[in-house]
Image (cartoon, rainbow, N blue to C red; front, top):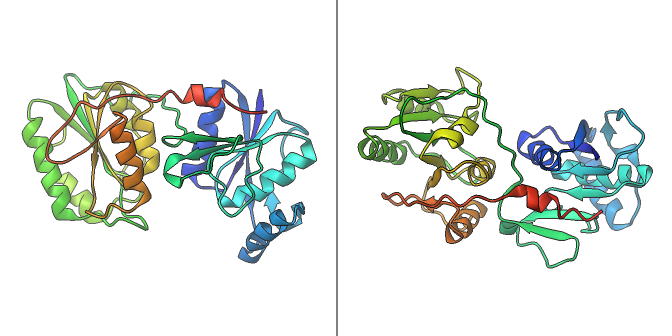
Length: 297
């Protein structure tokens, strides 16, 4: 199978499409989709509702081939383009997320449950984002270990230094005889990075200083992995690989967000535990390959 992946330039989106291709053991090509102005993107919503499809309103890299077995997309910038190119190539089009604002008439839609997708024959609900985890050998502990994955601020959450300090104190107290590893992310605030650097981690990656990603290795080796609640991508990776017990660190007390909805559902299903000054043994894993094989083309 050959797959054409449409990218909006956001790693959290295109990585879902790549994960899908890898779970199918397919070859794939990634091309960029862009609108020259926001007005053209807004126009795409209207044109889709009118069943009018034209490539004149967006720009894209020319694919290496004339046809593919399927076109895969994720992110609002890619949805209309996927329909246009699918019609040109007479190829099925699928999305890795619910294409809000556009008609739900793709051949297959993988939709996260926290988006409350409608019951529809072509919609396959997912408990998390498609992920494909590959350890890189960046972190290899010499004894039993615990991992900590720290995200950062987003539109819904702002990291609190005092809360993070309390969580770090718990980890170092309750896992004193473990190798404790940490990685921050591109969104981690400087004050949180400085806080992390004040603790005696056995292994640490401060992303602003060293742009590497050891998350897969944490999941491969660590008995427990703590993850801040701000990233559905990181959480999805954690519940799809390895045997680690997953602890989700709340960033504030607001519970009416898609992040809380997602992790509360996953907690009920035994995939993870929302940290509450205690650690559970929730380590159920999702097999995304079984979802990928439900492709309707």
